[in-house]
Figure (cartoon, one colour):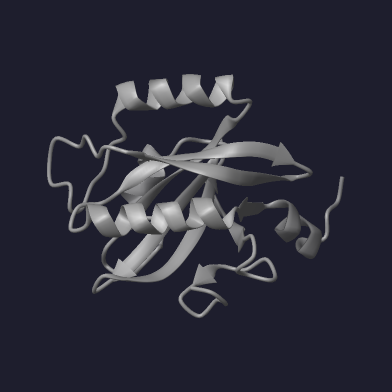
Length: 166
């Protein structure tokens, strides 16, 4: 089936509720100077996903957590169980970059969970800069997804410090 580039763009979209968005931003700021990480929970609707909640996780990376992250596996399992009981599913994962860029690094690509949204929140000097979402295919290729923050961004685009309400 052929999809126009615009329709494909609209289908590859992550909608994030304003409360979940604010919870992630607050978590990332409070975790600095270490990278923050967490799980995005919600429901699939249409061709995209709607994030209703964000579960902050402990960065369990054994090395330099200022540049690396690892979601605590036990915490991830507990969140997955609680989400299932609440009728939600894991739609993706997030982490922060403190260098001002939400670009997917090679390490991010290797560690990314396939077929779910992998959202990177970038900060510089303690201020939010941008967020970008990536979906990794089975072949390892990364495709960027548009982010819409409910009640904040009016149209599908990368969420940034220039977006309304940020």
